[in-house]
Image 1 (cartoon, rainbow, N blue to C red):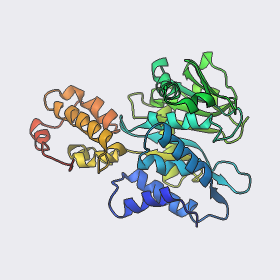
Image 2: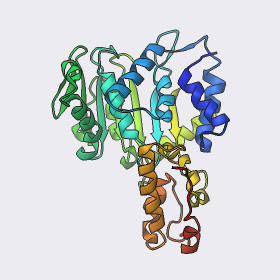
Image 3: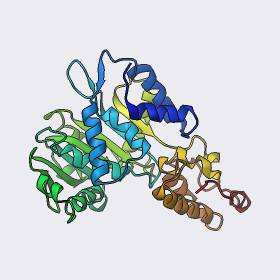
Image 4: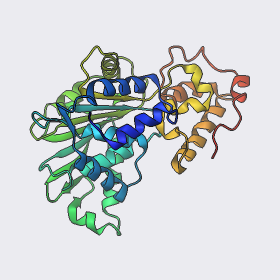
Length: 343
């Protein structure tokens, strides 16, 4: 059997009722227990990389949430035969505010660091707009350039358009998703931020073409459900469903999808952790702040039902077929106005 502390802790907490998971995450755990953990003959966790990444992130950035520590070992899960990653695509889909951008900020910084140790492991973050593409990049830039972080300044050259790991010569850059103006490079990792806004696969085709020129190529797709139907998001979402339903072999794509199982669950905030792991009890400081914000948005639906579509899609990570004709009454919403968490 394969063993990893973070994976086992996450699964144990779900089984004993401390974690509320939606059906797709339960399916993911079942696949892991069936196809990955029993196969210590063909797979191995790189415990050194897992520990280095988590300690690096928590030293320079913030304490990682349980869901981030659960995904991390699978980023550094390898085949014994050729030392190649078991999963080279990670789909991370959850309600807004869950911490997706913070997670990829720490990953991008770690990938170009000497601790990762792969030369020329370039990282590109791609988004529809420059503002979105720069979000995680700027977080790394600011952390490195803090006056108190002299050790990081020695390891990285941080400029406003690129960050370079001086020992590995790996470069972290941000780019916009205009396929006609981009060329595939020699990336080690490509991160597609808010990929639900992509109308087609053109930009993915461009950047994925540059993978494989350095070791351990990976792609990360992060986002929340959006309003572009039959675009790239829907294509990727159906692929994830096929993986989770056993129609596609479990390997290559790692689908971590957080969403409500039924829209009726929206009216009980205890269920919101299904769509957003940052709202999992017990709430930390950031979780309490996010919960209060989401709760205020929910309460406003009683007076402004036109905001329902955005709330359902962005906060609950759920696509409602008929937004206009499915609005909760004020009485239904007000009936939920009671304490839900012990803060």
